[in-house]
Image (cartoon, rainbow, N blue to C red; front, top):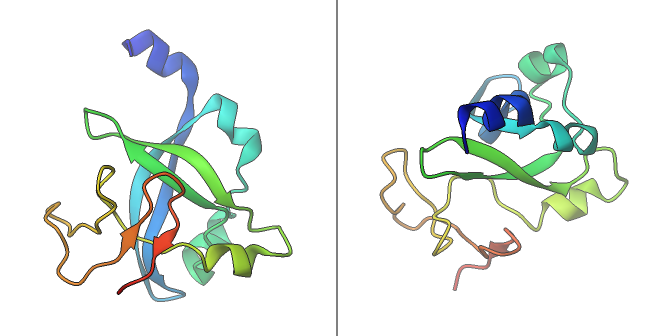
Length: 127
């Protein structure tokens, strides 16, 4: 993607919460949001996100070869009546795109970490 393609196609950046303790602490990863995806995603308000830990829609993001994360899909709409049931199918974190293995901050495999299905992003039950 050229610089002009990049700048003409992005709407901005958002923080994706990979884990949190609401009202206390959270770990967020910065991800690019494409202009075409803005109407599809419900973002939390600034006050509710920082003070109450509200996260908005549950989304998935993938990194490109340069290590920049792009929001790729909305998994569960926060405004949906079935949000809780939907979100229980997923687990937050950073995962290897090929194997679905959860990764540490240094990108090594997490010992006894979670796994996801790399196509649906749904959590794979531990055996």
